[in-house]
Image (cartoon, rainbow, N blue to C red; front, side):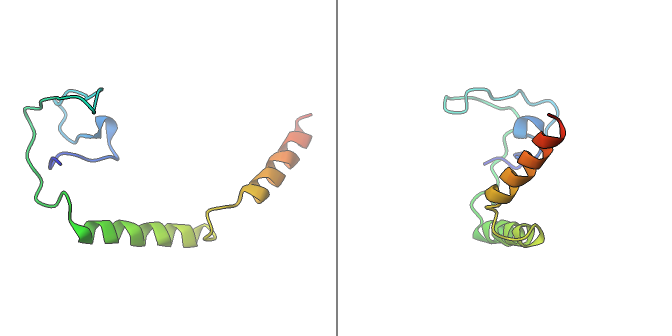
Length: 81
């Protein structure tokens, strides 16, 4: 991966002048590519996992609230019919 790669920004690149890569499964070239030494850092993955667990706990943990969401949607539909 590149040092400029960031999935949270538009075009997934922090370099303003970089072209957007449309076909990511094909060969492409970037003038700003700089190989990242931390591309496959297990610490970074662990940190991301901890953040996801904390976020799930913040929003009542299970991540599977489909029954509750369906009930709320049904109540909202009743209001607008």
